[in-house]
Length: 504
Image (tube, rainbow, N blue to C red; front, top):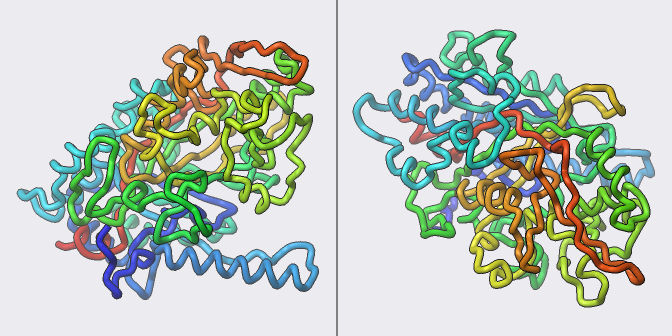
């Protein structure tokens, strides 16, 4: 990647959520909007307001890093003072991103005749992005029964505002400032049509058990570290389990690498990243029932052990592959200790550990941790890296309450085909991957999607001493996680928002 000039450092132009830590947050809103095609020029001009140094409504990575530094300083202070917990610091951050159709509207605002943004190039090099998630749904095996606003047959989404903060008020205040800057009151940007029947915003919040999703597992573990951005551990290598990743795989650069060939993108896309947003409903009742009713079949001690088998980690985040057989959470309660337990293989040297983490386990499907040669030359092992974000939605789970809850999932990558799409279609949904043992291993039991959800199965193998090793498939019915709507977006650099996208 070409080096940044001194007055244009990457941290100053990259939107702040595109990082392994992402926005600090207790609350987060995804606000979907449309741009009035007749006022596209006015919208383009307003983008400069969002990134003006005096307003900074859209956060740069440099700003988000400063926020995390403030949090660490307060944590250190409170520990020294032996206080029960650190003070909550007021902070809020926002990111803006556009669909292909949204960029097309902006392009027409910049010029009615010329393809200034070279969207023809974008369409040919990023087919999934230009198609949109709804059209891509058949390949993804997504459910067609989705929540509002995605259930509208004529829905057109142009953009997304992702706003996070430590309180609902902080989130609302920043969102309203951005909407005002984009002239929402003058209907330059608009709520999605349908009023109250079609909500334009989807809200999430961290759970009472902070950091864990509704199934009870620590989320956001094992993020890729971006070379040139993240602090890289000494002696870490690009191909080891610390997931040190070239920038060109996570963001668009002037030499973005893909599993097919380097892709040339228009210059305005450089230092931006593709954002995938998916609303994923979690059937928590079914998850616990499945584990309770089947753990004895695999000679496990209890339901919690089978739950860890399905996920590939204990609820604390500690990898099941580096622990002896357990009946409860991993012994490592300190989250930072758990996160440092990232350098591990699913195939430890000493038996019977090779069967400890099922081949179908969620974390093994999404991060195989083996050399490309053992996956039949699947080049996705190198290129399928994503920066994951997201936040739970819905109330705390109570058995049989009938309420909907789940995860507002988002991820960033330099190429959707290699990132999210390869993980979902080529790994999670593929019953043959990974085919190390030359047998079907089944679907990812957590996020795997199947064209017939009633036939989903995952292979679970237990090989404790004295127990005959038998591979048995566990039917995953009903489906544990169901797609309820989403879209593909592109989050441009702050430089592009200030210059190319607002140059009218």
